[in-house]
Image (cartoon, rainbow, N blue to C red):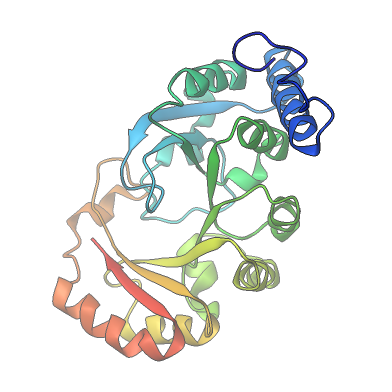
Length: 273
């Protein structure tokens, strides 16, 4: 129903394509909400940050955390989400969606992160529900599930993708603590590079684990991408490997010098503190 209670719409508009489109969008949003509220979307949310100014470039967003990950990156800040998911509270998607709708007048964007969100059953349905209510959606991913990324891109369900590229190929297993599927990672890189959505590839500059030549090798791996972010490592008590708290950070001047050398590979290179 449109505002004012005129179910039929303004005179002369009810049969028009514009009004029919509005009715379909309203019906789709209502259907998506009802599906979530009755528990038909099998997704479990493990955390939420109501307002973030940094997680979605150019947007004020709410950040939603999903549990579980197939990597064991030692510098990961979310050890509980990766290793102890079951110890974290479960937040129902219906509760989250209702909260987002109530706050929609000042927050119109959502960042979905983890863990690794693409491993979560029900992710696509949940994003559809967000999109049906007019929210912009950013996905953080490690790129190991290209089939999920392909479906989300094909369905026009993403407004921004941030893919973490952990290392040059020869160091991927070392830095992810697993036997990484590099072909899947490369497939995701190609999908994102060739998409029309805004995106970034990013690498966390962990001292002693990644050297200057490693970043240049990553540049060659991603050559032609629009946007690459060299991200400063941040020590924290919640790291997967607490011993990394003692590492001395790369000086900002060093990261800026590396960024200059990476510029031939990308349309834009950014250093993020």
